[in-house]
Structure formats: structure tokens, C-alpha cells
Image (tube, rainbow, N blue to C red; front, side):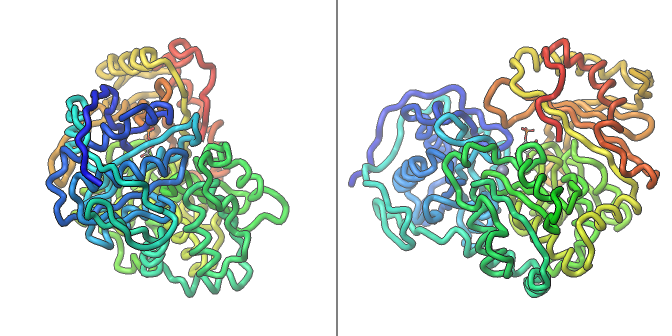
Length: 543
Ligand code: G1P
Ligand code: ZN
């Protein structure tokens, strides 16, 4: 079984976005497409002698083929050992947990997160570094630069490894250890949460419906919730990961998880609903007849963190992505801890977590996490909520209403315009950028504008600057509208419009969010000319 050097021709489209390289399966399955990216990565990484690599994915179509390819190339790179999840499966937070628990030098995550899977769906790959988090931009930029030059692939001609049997085998002297995907992750959850209190809650008749959306969260949720915490069998639904997620869109929001919402709004609804996405890093939490916004969820967790064993000592600080609502800022102010505002994308939290500047962080896009790993973590957030319900004896709705009573409600919504031609989207953003200087001080569509800028972030730990991270328009009353283009879509461009308004008056907390945000929708339309430029009358998705 020799190591081979094979000629290749570079692809020019392998620029990773905020979550790695994401493309259609039809693109990834072109000859040498995956190989070129992996070679570019391995060329950029230092010598691998003695090092361990973690490999796993969300089980979507092409996952198994990709794992075998990566194993052969890792052997040629000279890794001492690769830890791979059984069946090629590891959730994204589990990859992070395994890297950190084993002292691995990094890991490769195979996923396109919440994007649809299957032969016509999406595939993705990203590299995580030794802290367990996504590689920083200087690494991903270097990989992209290298991907345009790569002319040789180094691989082995070894046969496929059996991924289904736990245990050790080898390729070219590199050990391949097939591990149980859940064990290390479950160990970590046991350290953070009061499993006895949660067990007692389930024993008292508490009912949860966890929708794993036929994605990788299923095995984790089943093992921990049903296997260990005594939740009745059937608590976790759609628990078996499928290569095409059963044809569904594994994105836990009220639109894509409508079945879960229906159950939580039905007669005899369970006490709590939850869902996770394709790679199990996102979460949605639903109360009985009560949908929780991700921004509010982060704020509730921050407000009550000390009730949970892993966070008993309090939080060093919190962080949220810029478009996420300011609910957590208000909680942080009342706790007297810092709150950081970062660009969209999980990687910006890594430095703050590593430097112990923050303990909890989250995004409006159904991502919540903490210093326990360096990825967002769906099941972790759900366990956090259940732990809070167990020790407070309150309902999901009661905890959110308490937040609103104390801090006012941040009425919030995100409007997505999907699959816009890229040139139109660029024109729209350029049009907004052109108005930044003149908007402040004016009144547009009845809204008095206080400031307008293109968000720029200076990392407080390493001083690196990330500019052009989204257009913000702030009103005199504290409301805001944010515009940015998605970095994770695979078809044309997606415009995201984020709308936020603070409502201190408790008698108005039951306002319908979409109605309450109408003035901001008009402002957005007037300044961005969305209808004219995109030809779309309405957003494709509102969350
Ligand atoms: C989206 C979300 C962002 C999240 C990312 C990866 O990115 O908006 O918050 O970090 O997915 O899950 P976007 O498509 O907006 O670039
Ligand atoms: Zn995800």
C-alpha cells in the first residue's frame, strides 16, 4: 500500500465562507474537488508527525466517501492517529469536544449544517484547530490561496476502512480509531448539568418533544435524554440520521420545524419542544404554545447561569453576533459583566472564549454555546433549559416573560430573501453603503435615524480587524435594521434583513412581532429598494 503522488488541476472556487467550504454535492463529487481542498489544507498545516486528527460529519450524502478519502490523505500527510466517529458520524459540537478532550491537533468537520442534503443537496467541509473551534481567517485564507496552486495530491491506495466497527486499524502506519460518537460528548454534559435534577423532572412527568430532524443530533439526544436522563421512549423523534434528512430542511426554526410547532400548540402539548439542525450545533426551544426567539433564549440562559453546576461561579462575560438582539446586553448590564458584539459567524467567539473574556455566546440564527467547546451546541442549550426548568420549577414561557418584565422585550425578526442573482444583491448592498454618510439625522419612512454604518470589528484579544460585516441603521428610539449577505448559501445570494425594536411597556409584550416591526420593514424597503432590485414582494423566510 504505497503513498502516491498524483497530478491534479486546481479549482478556483474553493473560498471558504464563514462555515468552511460549502457547495452542492454535484460540485463536491467532481474528480479531485474534495481532494484538492484537503490537499490545500494539509499543505498549509505544519508537519503532522505524532499528531492526532479528528474526522466526522453529520452523516449526509457523500459523508462516507469523504471520510475514506480524508483518511487516505491523512495517512499520506503523516498523522500518527485519526479518531473517526462510528459510521463517519460526529456532530459539530462533538468534534469540538473530542478535539479538546483528546489533545488532537485539529479536526475535519463534514457538514453543510442546516442546508438540505442528499444527491441534489449540499455538502461541506471545514477545519477546526486545537482549541476545538473553526480555523481563523488567516488559516482559511491561506488554504484558499493554496487551493489555487495545488498541482499534486498525496494519498494512499489503501482500501476503505470499516467505519461501522469500533476499534483500531491502520493505513500506512497511521492508526485509525473508530470511536463511539456520543461517549466523550455525554461525559462533558454530565459535568456541566445537574443530571439528578433533570432525571427527577422527567420522573415527575415532565414531557419534552425533541425533534432531531433526521439529522446527527438524534443519536446524541436519544442516548442522553432517553438513555441516561429517563425521558420516556419516543421523546426524541426523527432520531435516525438519514443521508437526505428525509427530504426535509434540517434547520430548526418555526418555518422548517413546523411539525414541532404544531405539536407544541396542540391540545395536550408537551411542556417543552426542542429541535437541532443537520450537524446538531443549532437549537430551537419552544414552550407550550410559546415560541422562544434565539436572542431571548441566550438572554435567559445568561440571566440564570448560576443555577447550573457548570456555571455556578458566574459568567466572565457574554458575546452575541452583531445582528442578534440586544436582550443579552441588558442582562449583562444588570449582572455587571461585559457583553461583546462580534460579526456573524461562530469563529469570532473563539478568541474571547480562549481568553476567558466570555463564558456564554450566541447568535440570532438559533446558535447558542459556551466555553465548554468552541462550536455552538444544540443539545447543550436544550439541556441548559431543562436544567433551569428543573431547578426553578417554572415553565419556558414563565422564564421568558420574566426576562421581558425585567428588561423589556426586544421584539425581533429576521427576513431572508433567498436565491437573489449575485449582481443584484451586490448592487443593493452598494446602494446602502452609498447612503451611510447622509442617512444620520434624517427621517426616512417616518423613522428618525441616529446612525448608519458598516459594522467593523476589532478583536479585543488579537487586534485583528474584520470590516464590512453588515450595514446597521440605528434609530433615535433604539430600534435598528441590519442588512447583510449570507456567507453560507450555495445558490445565488441571500439578503438577510434583521429588525429589532425594544418594547419596555409590559402591557404591550404580546404584540405580534411582525406587526410591531412594520415601520422598520418600510424603512428597510425605502433605503434598500429590495422589491425593485430583487423583484421579490416578500421575504422567502421570516423567523
Ligand atoms: C448563517 C447564520 C450565522 C451562522 C452561520 C453558520 O450564516 O446567519 O449566524 O453563524 O449560518 O451556522 P449566514 O448565512 O448568515 O452567513
Ligand atoms: Zn449547524
